[in-house]
Image (cartoon, rainbow, N blue to C red; front, side, top):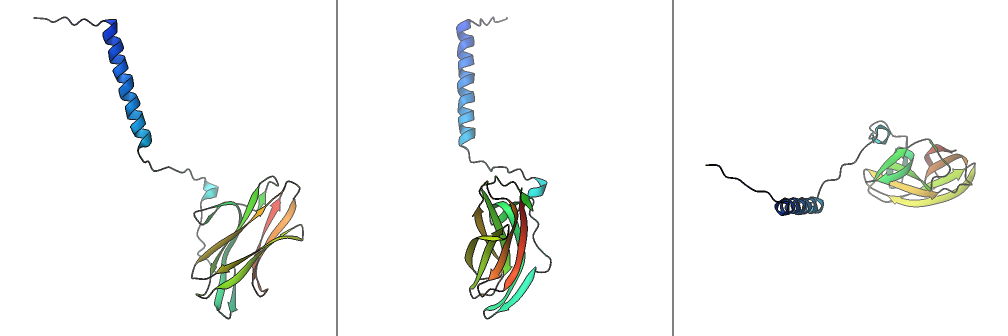
Length: 169
């Protein structure tokens, strides 16, 4: 005995409508479900932790201060420099000077002194303390600014710990 199933246009439209509604519900649930965002990391963005000797070390009354790393970059994300370079387009909005220290448990004052074409343009005073300190300063760059730049890293008493160079093209 064979059964004949008649499919009318109305039945086809109902099935199509049910499939569309089911797909919409699944898509809405998928979008609301918390998902871990994947981040694409370019090879030049990879952060290599400094494991070598310090760039400079100075003994202060609070204890020894070591400059482990000083870099100019375009941004800071999760306390790490992003897009570290030595030359930048002068049309960037901001540049960051990222520094990493090994400092005593007592607070120590440090300065980031920004110089562009030999002129001091900005100075930021910061307090560091603890075994592994990461601090940074940010400088707004105008399109008129150009040439060679330097950020000097100093202790509060004027002793120079180091510097890092950059070029605005």
